[in-house]
Length: 636
Ligand SMILES: [Zn+2]
Ligand SMILES: [Zn+2]
Image (cartoon, rainbow, N blue to C red; front, side, top):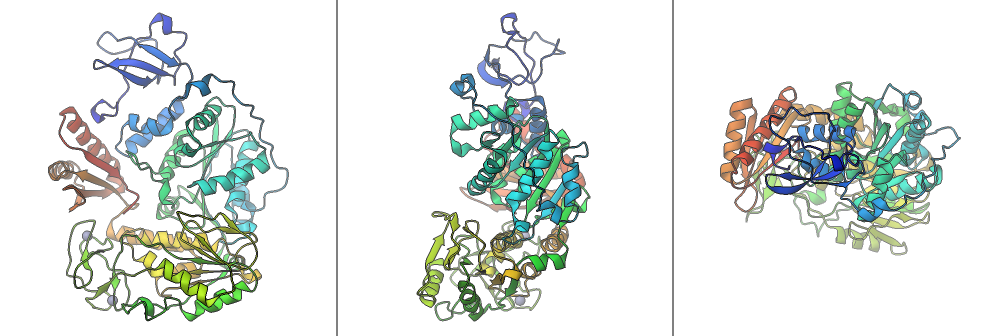
């Protein structure tokens, strides 16, 4: 039952005529509170300690065991972690039944062909060779690999995942490979077909339609395949004898489930690796503060090239340090494109395509000091300030605690704020005029381009949809760095570094004259980290910052959204019960408000359990209006 006060297993009697068809994990119909309901059999037992006579199961929908006990245990862990219900999480984990697919003859699944060549990517990293040795064994290694961002085998995430999968499959264990989006999945799928052979694995994604998704799910659940690829929802895929979960780019927004209880696939993977005692590998160019926190606790082993090796392998990166065009002057009168951008593009076009990354408009704009460009933060809670439109420029407001501070820059004392601006269309026009003979390719969320050739071209792309260039880009230009940095989200800088590194990873290395220019202030910490190619050092400093202001992953944070009274009551009760610190409330929409509560990590599970109890009281008493709970929300 999705109601928090009924979130537990219930006992039913198995009528004799159904006895032969009931197995743990199968779908059944039962009567509950006078209504017929869908259910799963979690366990078949000889008796019950219920103090009443059991109602009988009404029907066995199918004897197919779609909810294995180990997955049911993971679902319970995820529900508890997020103050959600089992019913809500099982919806994410088990796809709807597709009867025809279930009764049809299953397609043939040959065993994966294991490549004979020696691995090249993972052994190039310190500890990479030892990781490969212990994958699939009882050691159950957990690691985070910061790939060198370069368009060379060393920076090839697909090969890194395939090498880890090969080692695990060779040890006789199952593998789950997770990627954030459809285009990454297409690349991984193509390479897996090449390496392991078609049909030797399945791809689990909702985008393939209900029949294909269910067919792939059944192949995994029936143990017909040992390798499963997929996006967010595949984190729960029932891979038999699971030896490894590997997840690419854990910082991507799309890992956060948009349905209650909003679990993040990074966390699902970690909970699952713990519960099932299997290997766990996060692979990416950037490092999230969350994985950094896990590494700090020695829960994950960090793998990365030492600084000098990294700089030798990757493109050379420079910052223009030119913010004049954004410093409150009329953007039409001053080019957003510093001189160095043009020289880099010109030099790059001599030997291949050049990538230009332009942030899209439409972010919730944050604010920066108009004089020294320091990001403006709330003086009471440390959250980055957002700007509300007003006649005389933006008025600062904190979206975390609701304060409208009389802001003054802690660095230079100025009281003047500005919101950085962006203009994709103008950039395209401006560059097109500057390089009239060069073909221009544009890739955006609405019209993504997957790949470009090796010939010279200007490739304009918004972050996240940069086409891959055959042989790598000769150069890349990262525009409007400040726009990404000044979003009113605690993760703004982390996200900016992740976006930039993803673009850098498409460029040739320094020895092939690959170069990158970032148009932004060299003094900004995120840009310094990019220039030094030091995502781990950056993540460590971000984590220290979070510790200072008391936001996740250093604390646990619960966001409560709903009607004023419901939120106020819940916050009051939770504060009284757990001592958690309230923030807000702030208005959101339709007269609703949002408040947050945060607690030290050690007290986090107490807070989350208390939140669940509040929800259970509300549903038990049929209180009106909804109260939406998010634990450790993806947007901070
Ligand atoms: Zn300032
Ligand atoms: Zn605040």
